[in-house]
Image 1 (cartoon, rainbow, N blue to C red):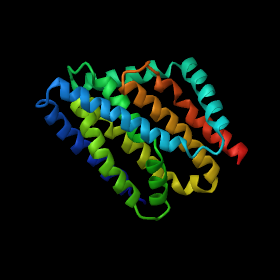
Image 2: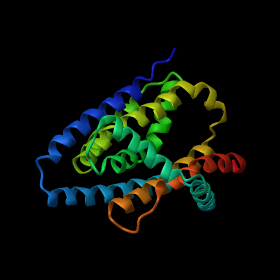
Image 3: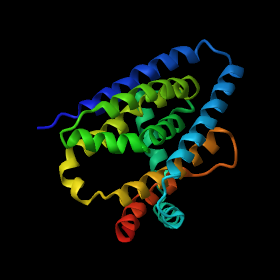
Image 4: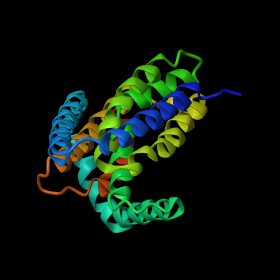
Length: 228
């Protein structure tokens, strides 16, 4: 049986980085937290822009996001994820008002990306988990900054990350024959637009309900398969 070592290391890096961020958050002042938040927002927008740049066709991303928004709104995904986050908060008996926002936002940032997708599949197909090791370093610093502002909710994003990347690693053999380059690019580009939306939220611009856009990733796979 394949052991998702890369996913385990990545989740561990999130926990350790988040723990350091929690400690730092108790020390640094509010002004410095705001500055860190702004820098993180700018970096997130930049990462999303770089991801979206690989779009095979811009219309694939547009159609995926429009259909995703309609589906997410109809399913009430934002509310469902908020309730799930509140349930975790209740289990942990946390009094942190930003717990749920931290959990959802951090999970989206570290899960929606090319490195997690490609790295997990590569390890699952017998390759090296080196991509996930590199991602672990990046996530360590990103979650440290997020935890310094959001608190403990950011640390618990290690759970969704482990489930997502570990699941991809274990299912890689089944998915590999169907994952064409066009599907991969469509998925990464659409995910990049979602990451940019997260960055806009971090910068305090008009609030975008990214949770309701998550079905866009499914549509990106379907449209990428049909147009590939």
